[in-house]
Image (tube, rainbow, N blue to C red; front, side, top):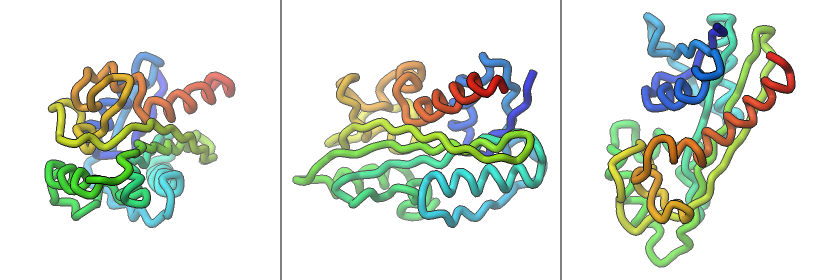
Length: 195
């Protein structure tokens, strides 16, 4: 079994990656498995830069294959915000209920288009870096809908589902999510490279 480190301590993300990678023979570990916490300064200006900063930092410490993602919600009416600041938007301690209500208010009477964007950085055993990006477009819902998912899922209305991503099963969400699209590109790269 191949071992891969996911450079996150977000339990929701770890679960998503495990669901997608374990059937392919990967033993998925994350920062939650480490004894000490690692503080990584994400000072990139794009999702791709931040993902690679995280992956390289963890690779330099552990020297094993690393996957890191940086993802967020980009709202058209807010000029792409919260974007790379999605997790830190309005402060780390602000609940997503408050963040989501704020975004709904910002979209009143404006273009409600938005996108979830994900960049996955992969650093292989030799320390070479690769980035794979995925995106799913939707609209900002008029209200918070659904209790599944996490983060901005309850306000991300996905037209083919006729509801938000927080109102469908994890399997349905994973079929279309920005993370699964980026991961699909990563997996096809692994197949091509016979990793």
